[in-house]
Length: 505
Image (cartoon, rainbow, N blue to C red; front, side, top):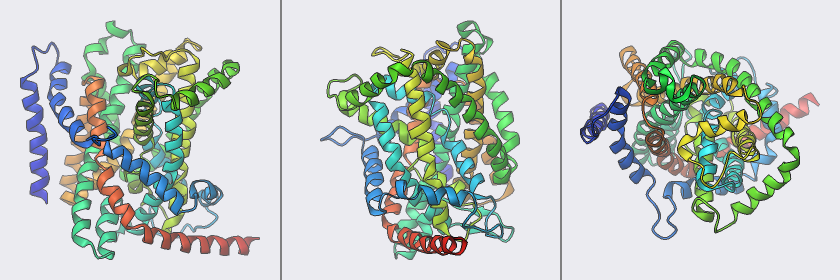
């Protein structure tokens, strides 16, 4: 397995080097790095987003949407009926401090949210609207609502099949419920193959969506506030990237407990800054809100809308929602597996809040700000991403780009440190948890922070989409097979909740 993994890395970097050979007269170090990844992005995008020949829709998105809808019906719309149980579980009503695990329910939620509530909610929404039109917002919201159930299922499995060593350290995530869960179902060989596929994809997702995408957009906002094209950072992205890499490295050396403590403090603060400003802008334009909502719904079903019409709006809505909330990717169970609990479904209920907060609330508010301020037009350039959102805030609050930079930096930072842990778990599953192996991963992760600040956003988005969505295939295949195990855990937890409620009534 280790030999296969190193061969994979060798091929990856060989492709990067061959791509650089076709780059024409690079003028800066940033352009040299960008040339390394263009060919990789081309190949990865073609493979992961293979389109169904009949509907011309990427198969991976069909699989994501289908899984969310089917599981929602199977579990009786738990995304709605389970909200009260979710809140009470976070409050600690149904648990104990002595339960096995490393972090409490709130810390697990914030650690996972720090990986989901991030620049996908700011830059990602701008991309979705610029490509798919205002109607993409509707499909993002719908995907977020149904994705709550997918996240519920994933995180229940994550806790059920986690491993806790003699020192109390937890290892969990898709790799473990695919290998151990499918073995329980008599499908051990399939489980091992899917687990390795998922672990590889998880490392790639951490490097891409959880690292380079975040660094790229934080860097872009730094250029905006420091003078634009005349800024020192304009052609020296590696300098900004190096600063971020050092900061990230200091935190991730501490492991999941350090990450949980950092994100528990950062996530509420950064969300408050961003959402307060966004709500202020919406209130200023409150009279236009009904018209914008009508436009969003109309364009969601308009076959002649911009960005590929109805299909284009759906594709961008589903893609950017999944990129943002990660439902169906299998990443969040890695953080949730560390929770202190004896009952796996308890964390499933907590986890279903993520897509609601991330997509239904934060993404929707961002979309309203962009559309209300007139920053979205049919000629909007999707590659500007964070710049579109920045201009939307600046049009009402002239000094806000500086505040937005702080929020963006915190979003990027918290997402990076959480995703570093996700990728590390995939790395450890394949190569083992020796100190040398883990340190090698952490150094590599920090190197890619620098690279993310040097690549063009077009290449970054295509590559990161391909890397993170490659997690979907092994994850959802296993999830569907393991639905009976999820049902078993849900029944057990419902009985426990009922008993506690009767005792305390």
